[in-house]
Image (cartoon, rainbow, N blue to C red; front, top):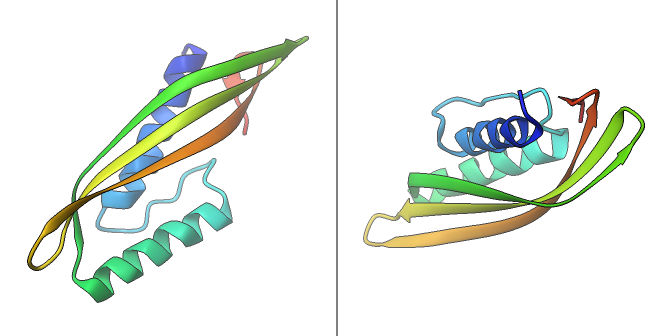
Length: 108
């Protein structure tokens, strides 16, 4: 699988964590990220808010190669349509992230 395809799969899996009815754990989802998702779910539940639609897009910013290792910096844009009891709103989040590859396989 190409590097960009691996990153795309990773960010789509993370995005699924926001809308999945159960807690979804992924290999590269750090504990603090998992806690953040769970906090968001809890706060939404308290406010009776529901994520109606969640989309994600990514863009590779830079990559550096040293021997069989590659570091890729990329930007992730999450966009979520949230329904409250009496209204809707859109939440957006931009994150700059870094992925590490060894022999073209994602390792972190």
